[in-house]
Amino acid sequence: MGMPGKRPAMIFTVAIDGPAAAGKGTISRAIAERFGFAHLDTGLLYRAVGVMGGDPVAAARNLTPHDLTRDDLRSLGAGQAASRVATLPAVRAALTEFQRRFARSPGGAVLDGRDIGTVICPQAEVKLYVTATPEVRAKRRWLELGGQSGPDSLDAVLAQVIERDARDMGRADAPLRPSDDALVLDTSSMTIDEAVAKACDTVAQRLSA
Ligand code: CDP
Image 1 (cartoon, rainbow, N blue to C red):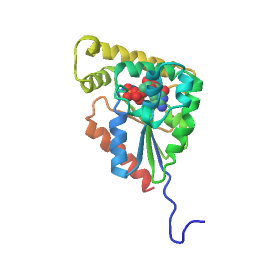
Image 2 (spheres, protein in one colour; image 1 turned 90 degrees about the vertical axis):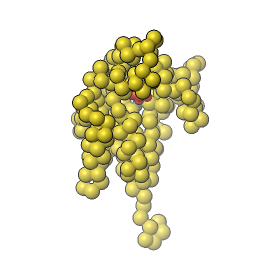
Image 3 (cartoon, helix red, strand yellow; image 1 turned 120 degrees about the horizontal axis):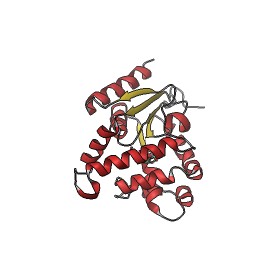
Image 4 (cartoon, protein in one colour; image 1 turned 45 degrees about the horizontal axis):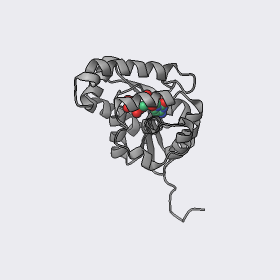
């Protein structure tokens, strides 16, 4: 029994999926800030398991919040390592419960990843699939990483984006794909502000429905 007059905190989940460097992170953070939702970048879980070394299943089972604060998680290498361990069903299973619990954070939650709308939270109130052409996404990620030449050149980033997409879409367990009821947001010819505005409008509409 709750306290008289006290309303239970709202449960409201926004699921944001899409391929590498599509703008999911920026859109998720903007939604979290505007609506006061908790935000979980689920890619960080896989990145942390990927860079840990040793047995990835044990790493996933023993993951702690502290592991998510490593400063090398955003590197291209961590992205590749993440997509390799992410093909392992036992790794995905070890991370499922934490994500589902987070999705029910009192007051609302936004989770971004690859399988949030399809596997982790099929009941999410809002589902967005954020995408863009591989060339546009590679350019964004390359600029984000400092626009360097050498091993992290634009061509190298594009090759890695294409390789990672193929692995994420081709795996047997929880492959990347838009859920049937997701709103597909192609940001190829949108500014990030336009993409954020469209995503926030979708959430606002569902909240007032
Ligand atoms: O930021 P970016 O879109 O490049 O990648 P990320 O969201 O940090 O995810 C890194 C990798 O983790 C992806 O390429 C996927 O292989 C994996 N991942 C996943 O399988 N499921 C998720 N929910 C999130 C990430």
